[in-house]
Image (cartoon, rainbow, N blue to C red; front, side, top):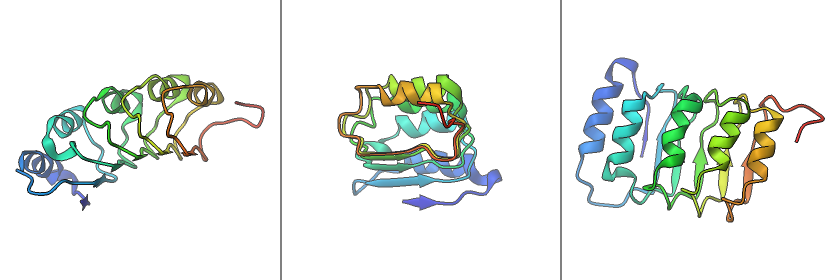
Amino acid sequence: MNFVFEEDKKNMLLDKLCGLPLRHQVKEFAIEDAVLSAKNLENLFKSNLLQSIQCLNLPKNSLGNKGIAPIFQSDRLRLIRKLDISSNNITGEEGGRIVADSKSFPSLACLDLRFNKLTHEGFRVLIQSKNYPALMSLKVDKNRLEDNGA
């Protein structure tokens, strides 16, 4: 499923989408440039919509460190193999630590963190994490990584 939301209809559409009975398992879900709220994320993660998701794309949603925390604390996203949270204002060491400390994604093979504000400290914490045994691709270009960083 891939949706583009107009700001004034976003909450209504997400609420309806989360309440739909599913006849088929959804494998990929994308919401881009919708500026998701904590309530939007909470409803999304509580719904049955994401129970079999393997690819979750949430770029350009201004999630920030606070907004990504529920994603990395959720136990309903364990099947995800690809996660795109690029361009979400994820910052500093704290942002890297939120991602690194999560044990919610044992099958994650591809993580896209491009166009955020991770520092070399945040990147270092992330690459030292043992919580992503299946990770094959980590995209971090266009962050605040210094040449002498991680």
